[in-house]
Length: 268
Image (cartoon, rainbow, N blue to C red):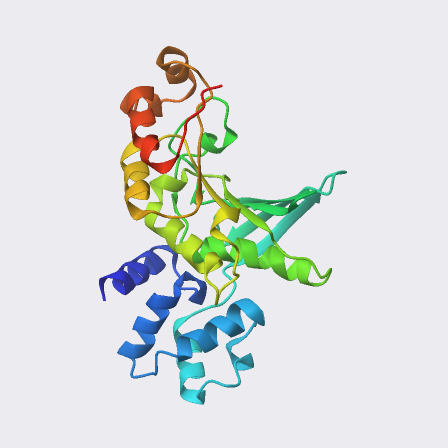
């Protein structure tokens, strides 16, 4: 039950729990612990991610007692839209408020190869990269997996009205994804799941400024998601001026950590 305990602990910190926090195996584990049949997890996933349910009462093939338990223990959408700005090229910026009052930004971009959503993974950021406005607000907290999922779902529900779908996800918004490693991977598992949003692993990209231990963990996990490394400089002397993370993880360490995750490395 340690995974579920971690979810509950995180939920207490942000003052809420959203059902979107749960990966399918976590939901199956939770239901089993409550005396429910594990297959109910797939039913709930179908309501959440296929039918886009906005209230637990819509889940009509679940037992009434389970619906009431879900209502008591969980919320659905943990983000509220504060502002939306749309540029001439149709790029849309969403300012969302979370349940604790914190705000995050999510961006929808339109390309000829599909629609991409840039997701935030933290409130604020501690990396202090010189070129990034995200670091102006130091890290307040990590986002839960469900708060990241909600960013995608909110936009997907808008696209549903146009008969469109989110094609690609990039975890490149506010925050350093590998400083919130477990929640980010849970988020990826949920949106990648065949029972979730079914977005292919090769259409999901995680960006990092170069947290070497997490890159090594990522390589050991043999994940199929894309990994993007933010370099911004060809040598340590310049990179350290732009990206303080280079002091802890210089380029030689970073390149060695990256080697198992790619077939070739091209330095441009």
